[in-house]
Image (cartoon, rainbow, N blue to C red; front, side):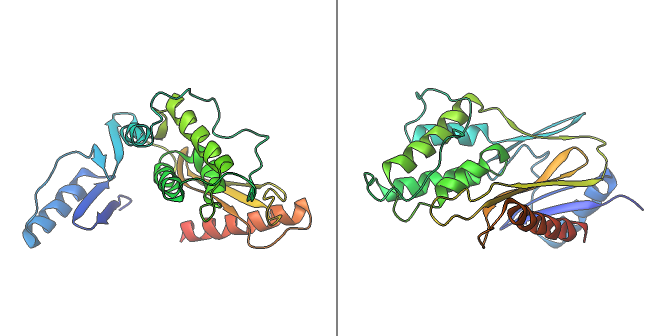
Length: 233
């Protein structure tokens, strides 16, 4: 049998699906026979994620959550930006910069990190800004606000998982070279697709300093292959 069921449990909420409807019905009957639970119907909203299911595939977004962020941090009337970060933006500790409300800054970073669950296009910029949460300055806040302004113009973007996609596992990796001005470490970035569906991604500063672009790429490729092997298992 080639059909599989997929089950996600979060506290007392359960979402499940399968490549075969009969497996979903069987799981539902088994759970209801053992526990007092109710069926909520087809999934359309879960933990801030909006799920739209069509005959051609599934679309996941967080546009409602994004709008809540704009209202919470006073950004709903800001001017949209075309990119989340300028290519000339190189953040550092900015020790002589003007201090800001760290609590608000950390709240914005935490909210954006959660939003990256469906917006991999902001993960690098958000993780870059997250490095300066202990002593945030005005320059760091400006970079975070630019990410917010980018989201204003791209609020309806999300992840598309087409029906009948292949199960081929494909990944990509890359790195910059000494991109962090503070400790001269490079940043690795990877993403993994099953067929044409994006299923895993991250951006992370490397643990060691690469003395050449080749070494920085090698470190990035190492973590990329580790993720590939884990997913294959």
